[in-house]
View 1 (cartoon, helix red, strand yellow):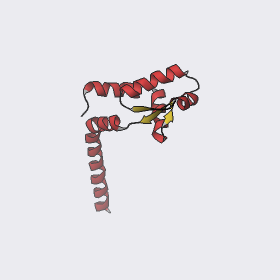
View 2 (cartoon, one colour; view 1 turned 120 degrees about the horizontal axis):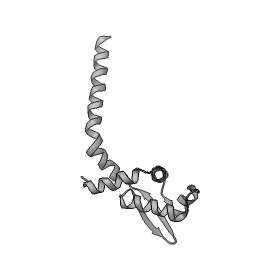
View 3 (cartoon, one colour; view 1 turned 90 degrees about the horizontal axis):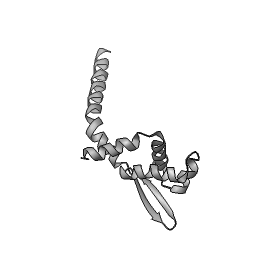
View 4 (spheres, one colour; view 1 turned 45 degrees about the vertical axis):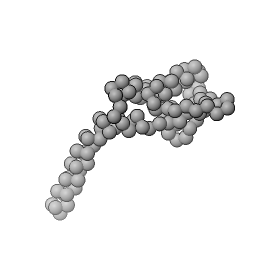
Length: 109
């Protein structure tokens, strides 16, 4: 399980809509920093790099250099750890409730 500091970095990274949009793009496929900069034309390259730095610090992005390009890859593991720690136990209750509701409705027919 991740520590509180790791969770804080992930929540901070996810707290910005532009970083979430970057993750959405990276979820589709790895992209170079240049491609991300082109997509976020309202941001300069330095700002894109700062956002990527926050995402990397949180472990949500893994960057690999290939030649002159820096490729950015989405790493879903930190989000999964937060899900497992904070969300899954509540989701289980909701699924159980829906299953009971379905069963009760079927018995009433």
